[in-house]
Structure formats: structure tokens, C-alpha cells
Image (tube, rainbow, N blue to C red; front, side):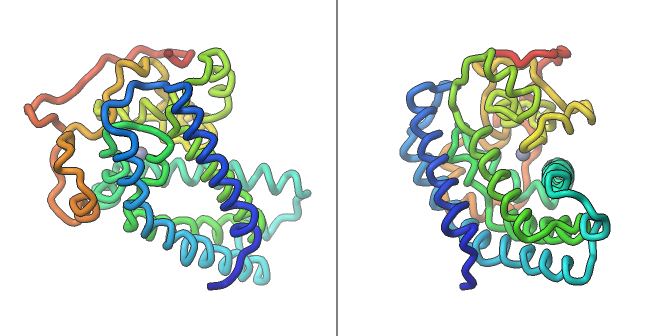
Amino acid sequence: MRKFPLIDSVGNPLLTCLFIVLLLLQWRFPLRRQHFKVLHRLVRNFVLSIPGFVIVRLAMLPIPIAIAIWARQQRVGLLNLIDLRTWAVVIATFLLMDYAYWWWHRAMHVVPFFWRFHNVHHTDLDLDVSTAARFHFGEMILSTAFLSLAVVLFGIGPIMLVVFFVSFEAATLFHHSNWRLPIRVERILNLILVTPRMHGIHHSIVQRETNSNWGTMFCWWDRLHQTLRRDVPQDAITVGVAAYREENELTLGKLFALPFIGQREWRLPSGEIPERETRPAEKLAE
Ligand SMILES: [Zn+2]
């Protein structure tokens, strides 16, 4: 395995520390009431994510890094064609890549083939920092192709790619966490960032709410596309996918197999379609 000190000695230890800190914070200051056994979910999400971790380390980073090095040498891609100062390259990388990922996340929801894989992430019946790792390995393979394409298109340099990737993963851990931030603090953060309450709405069993708040780092893209929803209080959210609510249908084996079998319509086992009225809201609801 090729060594990447910036990932192995800096990025991974940082993300592990952040994971532990968020785990403690969400345990001490919980945001949403959890309905299922925490340890059980942690173990399930961890085991489910193991093939994903392997893919990230062996393909999802090495392949785009190799492409980034090649693109730099050949002067291919937007940022390799224009001369910018370092600070401008940093800003451009974060904006371009986070916006590209907004489209990618949107595609994960609206393209039926992609949804088969992303569905596994959304079937978690509670939402916390461990959900941030719960991705089917098929989604990680698809993401590797997407990231490689974005890197060559935008001409992202290898170091900037790793810096962005670690920041992006940190943002993913943060907004999935079940940490109750003081609402005033979260509303200020939510002027810029995707926060736990904002992303909580994205994990609702109401389909229109799941089809909103697609951002990962910055909340601006959802505002731009009018897919930003802030009006749902956290205690009104039921987390999960309407058609997949039975715990015994969400065992590890069944989750690994889920993308490869017929997908159910978005309705509760009772046949009912969960709905809720939308009210435009400038401020994030409690
Ligand atoms: Zn999603």
C-alpha cells in the first residue's frame, strides 16, 4: 500500500479524535431522542462501513491523488490553467468541490440507480455521528469515480485534494452528530455551515424533507437552489426511510444486499405516505 503521510499521520488521527469528541458531546448533550440501542447501532454502522474504509484508503484517495498529480504535470483542469495565489486556490477548491458534491448528493437521491446505494445510509432509524460512516461500499465505488472526475475537471492539486477531503469528512461527522448545540450558536453557524439540525431534516421519513438540505459543508447551495429547509423542529422528525422501518429488515446481511433487490415505494408499512406542510423559515427551528 502506498504511503500518504498527510492522510495516515495527520488526516486519519484528526478524524478519529473528532469522531470520539462528537461521540462524547452527543452522549452528554443529546439533540434528538434516540429510539434504538446506541451500542447496537454503533457496532452495526461500524461493521457496515468497514468495506467503505478499505475502499477509501485503497482507491477513493490514491486514484484521485494520482489523477491530480498527472493533471498538474499536464496542465489539465480549471485551476491548473489559471495562475492564482494560494489563498484563492484554497477558496476556489472548497467552493467548487463542495458545490460539485451538492450535485452528487442530489443525484444520489434523484437517480434511481444511485438511490439503491444511498438508501442504505438513510435507513438508519436514529441519526448520530456513527451514521456518517454508514455507507454501502457500492456508493463508495461510485463516489471514487465522481471524485476522480471532479479532480480532473477542476484541476485540484494533490495536497489541496487531501486537505479538502479531510475537511469534508470532518463536516460530515459534525452534521450527522446528535449534539445539541445552543440554538443561537447553531443559527449563527448555519449562516455558513450545514449543521446537525439542518441535516437532521434531510434524514426525515417525509420524502420532501429528505429531498432537501443536500449540502455537506456550506448551506449556500441549498439556498441557491431553494432546497433549504429549516422549519422542522427536531422533535417532530422521525428518522429513516418510510418503507424500511422494521429493525429485523435492517440487519447487516440485508443492508449489504439492499441495493441489489427491488426498491420499495416511499410509503410506510401501513400504506400511508408521510407528509408535512412546508412553511418558509429564515431561522433554523429548535
Ligand atoms: Zn442523503
